[in-house]
Structures are given as C-alpha cells and as structure tokens.
Length: 498
Image (cartoon, rainbow, N blue to C red; front, side, top):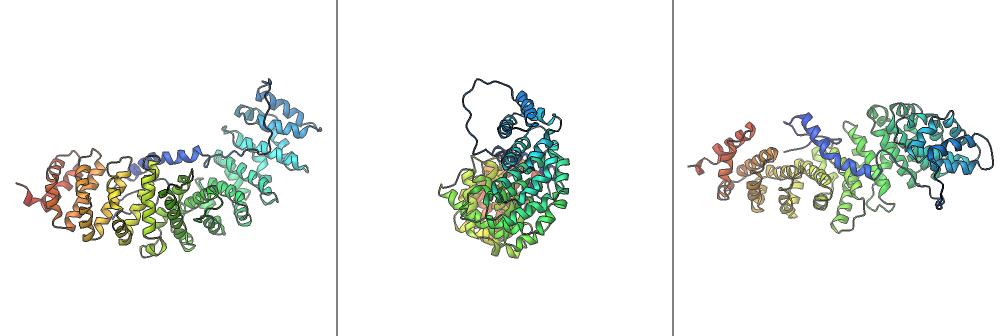
C-alpha cells in the first residue's frame, strides 16, 4: 500500500510534492536532532580531564584572555614549570574569547605542535588537551588554525595508549564540522583509512571504538561523504565491526552502540542498494536489538538516553527495508516480536518524544506495506486497538498510524472485517471531521478499502452517522477531497441516500 521512500531525515509518499514533504520532514525531525545535540552526540564532544585537581577557592580574578598571553610567553622559554604552565593554559582555553586570543599569538599553534611531538610524555598529553579545548571552540576561525596539528593527531591514532588515542579522535571529530578546508585537508591526510584501521585494530578497547565511531559519523555527515568516505568504509571490515557492537546484551553500555548505529545510518543513506550491509545481516542485527530494547521499554527498565539508540536503529531498519527484496523481508526480521517492540516504542515515547513515536510509526508503515505477516501479527496480538487510540494525536503520528491501518485493510478482506470489529469505523467518523486535510484524505482512502473488503461495512458506517460526513466533504474547498467523497457516495452509498 504505502511504502515510504528512503530517508535521511525526510520521508516521501508518491503523489505528494517532494519539496513540501522534505520541508515538513525537516521541521518534524528537529526535535530528534536537538535531542542528540543536547547530549553532545553530534557536533562537538568535550572530554573531562579525570586526573585534574579541583580548583581551590581563590581571589584571583585575572581574565582568561590575559592569562593566555602571559602563559604563552612563559611557555616560549624552557623551564621547570612548563608542565604547570601547560595545565594552566588548558584551563584558560576553556574560555571562548581566550581561544581567539591564543590563535592570534604568533606561532602559538606551532608551539603546541612542538610540544605534542616532543619526547616528554607529559608535555605531549597537556599539549593535546590544549588542542582538544580549542577543537571545542564555537568560533569558526579556530578549527583552521589547528590544521598544523592534524597530521600528528592522525599518526598518534596507532599509538599504544588507548586514552591518548581517544583524545586524538575526539579532537579530530570536533574539527571536522567546522570547516570545509579542515575536512578536505583531513581527507587528503588519510583520515578515513586511519579511522578504519583504528576501528579494526582497537575492537577490544570499546572507548576507542566509541571515539572512532563518533569521528567517523562526523565525517559521514559531510556533503561529499558518499563519494569520498563511504566507498573506503564499505571496502573495509568497518561495517561488520559496527554491526558487531549492536548486540542485545549491551554489556559495554549504550554509548558505543549509539555512535555505531548513527554511522550505519549515514552509510545506509549514502548507498544505493545496501547489498553489502544486507548480506552481513544488518537487517537482522537492527531488528534483534530493537526487539531487545522494546522489551526493556515495555517492562519499564529502559536506561536513560535509550531513545538515542532507538532513533538511529529505526532509521537503519526503515531505510534497509527499501533495499531488501520483498520476498526476503520476513525471513530477515524478527516477525511478531518486532511489531510488539515497535508498538511499545510508540506508546512509551508518545508524550516525551513524539518525533520518535512518529519515526516508529513510519517503520511500522513500511513493514505493513511489505507483507501480510506483519499485518496479521498486529491483529493476532491485539495491537490494533492501541493504534486506533492514537488517531486523535497530531504531530504526524496520526497520519502514519492511519497509513498502517490502511495497509492492513488493503491486504485481505478478512482483515477489513476484523478492523471494523475493533472499532476502526467509529474512529474514521472522528478523523473525517478533522481540519487536517491529509488526515481526511487518508480516512477516505481507508474507508474505501473497508467498504470494498466487506459489503456490510457501508451499512454499519451509515448507522454510525458517517453518511452525512461524506456529504459534507462534497463541499470541501479541497478538490481532491471532494472527488474522493463523491466517488464513495456514488459507488457504495447510493442506496442509503434519499
């Protein structure tokens, strides 16, 4: 019936204005994107310094800008207090205005690079922390200023210290979205194969995997990633490594899985047929993990931030469905367990994360458009009444749910009978009165399928007062709605009109 196209952050339906749908989808997805930004999973990541001593109360009110200039001058000269000065500089660089002052100092970045590449391990660490603070700057001028350090950051990715590697990765990841020049330079310097190698060789260090996946996701979001990044990633073992992190146990915590899931989402959206990922079991992996997470949500045992993993998994699943042959869908998914999990997400996030509830309904729509199995599961497991109750909700949730119900009606006549018995007709009487024209149009389509599926539906619809609703729609200002209502009245309700 309705099978929505592949989306990055949009979905489309045949017959609608593509540009209008894109605009609407971008507006609808802003809540989810904001949720990720709020948790610093997109854009920038600032690591806390675990071994940093807590500052004592002090009367020192020297501005950070002045500190930076003074500390820079001191660091230019060798001395026994260089490490102390570096630590102080790192703290001062947390002030955005101090960051601008620092990069304007002559040879300031070359000083940090010299310390980063020197023989003193403590100086290297403190110099890297200073660069990490700079990479988190809100000022666009800071990232290009850090370019002299990037070749060395890439080299250190193969170093022996996992903590040092993590810090290098997050610093690189922070620099990528700020500047096209930085991104192009990093690509030329070989950041993609470096990240691939890092994920392949550091699988036992989940912190490094998380950091590498974060940086890779930043790279995969750039506008030319499909040409310059994705082919290299697909030719490596990275997709299988990313999938291996998506396990139902999640013993390592959510963070690595979240980053890996977003990487897979961006890869899927940049690939035409996704044959490689499907062959590696991506559909099974995503659906299995969603089933596990759905069980946790239904039992009330969900971890905080779980929705940040559910979202990319839903997008991976929904977009992979558009690449998977219809005859293979059923055998690659978890059947009835999956629709139970999806319905759990819709109910759980309906009020707290409506955009995520809508995302889940979109996947349900794609599933029910594919095969009878998923439609039958919704009916057999008595999940349809819960879906019907969602039709009064707005924010795009009701339109997606109504498409799901229409998909069920479209499959079999006996499904139509069951939908009527479960109360869909009375719900349609309510949705036909809505001001939202899309909901009225979808309601007319669903009604048309129901009356075709069973000869008794028209009579029952009239008993519930539906005839006057169709007659009123004949005078609607929207021509398409008038045509649909007129067609229904002439073809199925003539005998009920005086």
